[in-house]
Image (cartoon, rainbow, N blue to C red):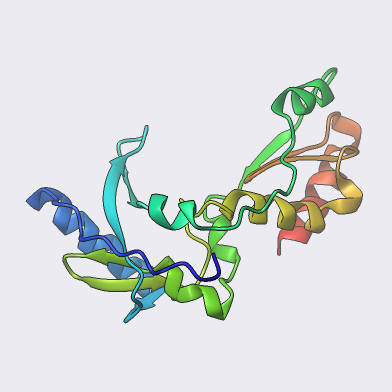
Length: 183
């Protein structure tokens, strides 16, 4: 990305019913300290996408930023290898880290690049956002560091999903240890 000119696109059109939801989600992100107003020359448009449960997720269209970003090639686990590890499992707990990405702070010099434009203003992320090309690899690397000594013995991690234990005898101990790590 060094030497790349900032990319900025106008906000996408949005139906009036979605504008109310956009305003609500922006306020929640501001209140949590995940975003702040921006004067960055960068700016991606946003859209609201309906999820399976009918709720709506704010998505930033970072395609132009992602084109000029140096990719993090951290190895992601193969899903079939993870399924192989579940062979013979009798019991396990699944921990879903719903806002896990928001636990990673963006490096100060990269914050302006996360800027996005809406009808209600120009904002930038202070924490990792969905849609950034390196978000997945960065989060997976963090999870592997957090659970390094537990991987493949009592914990299986796939991005923001954590499976704990395989049998009833060790389950409670392993689950308690995994939850302690996440504190």
